[in-house]
Every structure is written in C-alpha cells, then in structure tokens.
Length: 356
Ligand SMILES: *Cc1c(COP(=O)(O)O)cnc(C)c1O
Image (cartoon, rainbow, N blue to C red):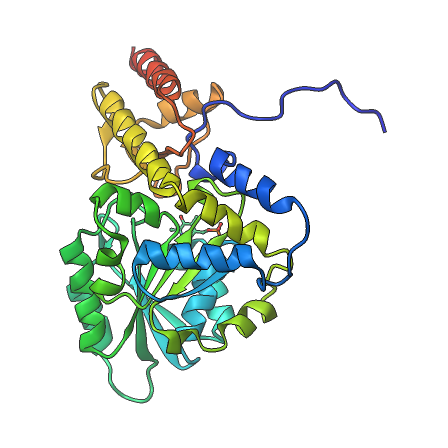
C-alpha cells in the first residue's frame, strides 16, 4: 500500500461539539503516570479507588461510583437499574436518551417505555410531566418510575438550584426516582457556581451520569448513585453490557488528574466563558439571533440557510440538528480567543456578503 505524504489530520477551530477537542493536559498526564508499572485489572486497583474517593469528595457524600466508556451506556444502564420492564421513564422530548441513543434505554431495560413531555428552553415542563404521571393509574399502562432530565439541557440552559429541587420534589411526590444526564454536568456546576451537592443529592437526585469525555478526558463517564440500594449489582450490569474496562485505571485515573487541582471545573468554566464571548460577538451581527439563554458552553444561533451553507463551504463544522436555520456552536476546554475571533470574523464577513 502506498502511503500518502504526511499531512496534518486534525481540524482547527471547530465548534461542532466539545467532543471534537483533544485530551486536556491534566488527563493526559494522569494517563502517563498510571501507565508505569502494573496494576490490578477490572477496577480492583488503587488508582480507581482514589478516583472514586475524589468523586465522593466532589459530591461531599458517600456515593457509589462506576466508570463506563460513554454517555449512552452510562444513561441507559443507570436508567435500567432504576426500572422494571413494565415501568416508564418521563423525560423532555429533546432528551438525548430519546433522540440520540438509538433506543439503548429501551434495549438495556428490556422494554421500559420512554414517555415524552414538552420542554421550555430545554427544561422539562413540570405541569406536563405531572399530567403524564397522573393521566393513567390503571394496570394497562406502564407505571411511571423515573424522571430523567439533562443538566445542562440539550439547549445549553441550566436548571437553577430551586428548579432542580422542584423536579426532585415532583419525583418524590409520586414515589419516582430522578436521573440526571450530566454529560456536561461540570459546565452546569461552573455556571451556577454552587457546590455539586446542591444540584444533585440535596435536590433529590438519585443518580447522575457524569460526563468526562466532553470536558477533556479521552474517554469515559462516571455513574454516580446517591442511594446505594439502587446500585445493587450494577457491576454485573456493566460487565454484561460490555462496559467493564479491564485496564480500568485508564478510565478512572484521568478523573483524579482532573479533580485534584480543580481542573475539572476550571475547564468547564473556560468553555462556558468562551460560549458567552461567542454569543456576544455573534449577537451584534445583523440578521442573526441568539436563540436560547447562553448558560453553559453552547450557543444557538438562528441564521439564514445561505449563511449556514457559506460557513460550511469555508470549512466550519457545527450542528443544525435542532431545526433548520438553527446552528449550534459548542465551546470546549481548548477553545481560545483566536478561535472566537476567527469564527465571528468569518460570520460577519459572510453575513454581509450573503445579504448584499
Ligand atoms: C454527548 C451526550 C451524551 C453522551 O453521548 P455518547 O456519545 O454516548 O458519549 C449524553 N447526553 C447528552 C446530553 C450529551 O450531550
């Protein structure tokens, strides 16, 4: 086979997703450190114990911690452990578990039904959720068992502490569990500047799937159970689903690298900061509209289709999955001012050209 001349394979300045970014220095260093020598496999090692303890310190409680490879597994296995197959999970219609996980929740739970309710700027409409819970109480309909929300939401908004408590209270009122899809949980904590416990167990959350990948890890999410009874045999569930890493230290140690010196929240705050910068820069351009409040690390912009096309032609990557004419730009731990300036500059120039 002939090998082509070496060319840079990476992309520059991309805003498609925070999972386009590389591995942050703290996670990289942790991988290097734990690679020396040998360690027990399947999580029975001191590096993994340390990461679990640092996550317990982060949440300020004695939670049960498991590491899996990705968010789809974290969400669907966590939800499966909260439900029987005849139960239902109630979530906003924009939920990642509904729109982006290929039915994994239903698959791993052996058929638990996901019921969708409307959302307001990505946040679950509590009145609609209560209606969905109480609409039927007979045996012919699946029994509501879990409320599932994302923090931040898929639209980049963040539930305030009182809003989280209100969701928790609704779950308790109907003897349901509360699951939080926290693929970007660190961005929510950094945005609200609260203790992680205030938007988790103190607000009535039973399990958080805590994302590492989008915040700078190479791979991996932590599943955090605040009620040990719900984590019963979760290790078996992970193993059966192909989610038990044999070289576990490479999933767990980067969490320690991120937690010991506060890098986790620093990177999240960094990404949030540049999202606000980007929103400010783009909002000044005629014909563009910032659509949702910019509270985490994403910016949603309504713009003409011709401009979307022109930006793509120039090599910019971004998603338009929420609806036509609506572009999502996502900042990460590695976004820098030059990236923002380059995008805003191009948008300004092309907006003028496509209008003129
Ligand atoms: C990215 C993301 C996930 C996880 O997705 P994977 O690709 O399976 O790692 C889960 N929930 C939300 C809201 C996400 O944005």
